[in-house]
Image (cartoon, rainbow, N blue to C red; front, top):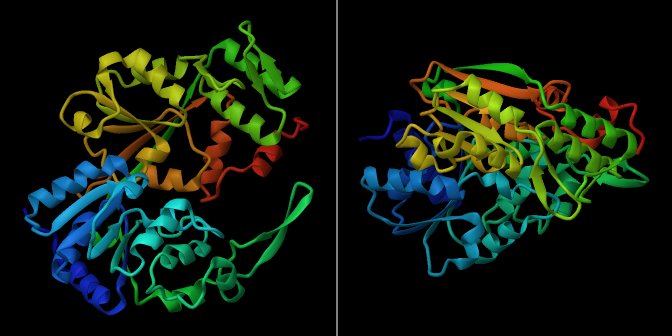
Length: 410
């Protein structure tokens, strides 16, 4: 087994950047081989002990790459959430899906711990979508390193004075500052020597993405609950469990859950109310090896009750059996390959545009000519409105929900 020519070229370039800048950001699109490129960069750089931080579901595939391509440096692979458990010294850090450190204005807790422990070490950052929502996401991604091109700024707020057109916007009765309008060209001039970009087109991918929306008729009880919730903002079942939609956000979330047949009650319990989507998917794709993305945990339970032993949530088991796989959208949208599925089927849809664009690429390989994607939307449900929004690279928000549901008063 050997690396592709472009991976060899990029890793040599990346090692040179790493030597001079102590940071290199590989902004390579999904399925172009970021992991192997990063591992080869570590080899050329001369690293002896490497820590590779990633998502839990991606650990096995990274280990496979390491084992099968003959790397001989010491490698520790963990998920971000286990960072606090790691002990020992390293001479290079690789962080996968690094855009997860892009939260602003304040960095998330894992980013803070990462900086506290490793800020003085050389780092390789990996992401196919470095700034999926705003160029303001750049600052904290670099802030974790002492070698950041913005190291003179101690926090986002100070950086924003020079790099963001700060606006004011009304949120309910309050007026807040909007830091999303970063100065892209100015940021690019400061970061361009740290970032190596590479696209699927440059790699020779010719995969087309074909999406189809299929409507599923839900049970009458589901539609009755949704309509009653919209009208009264509260629904109680015979067991005394309450579905409450007394705020705009809660109403939006409950309608989202109910549209696909599940609900979380006020007491914290959750329940499958309607299995029609699970039956629809099972019958429509019977005998076909598919990958299913779902949003809420009870949706997986609905699928499991219909598929039984024919369904798994383990990528390795999926790859080595005839079983179908079901993964939660957020946990499955990054760092894994679902290339062994014939089709990608969505039980539900996430409010996040990032989830849409990242998750639908899980089938892509260089050899694959097309990705066939099916969206299963409830007839008259909220999913189509969400789909139309994320398609425009925008998140589905409360404001959009209220515009679409003009008859509802919160």
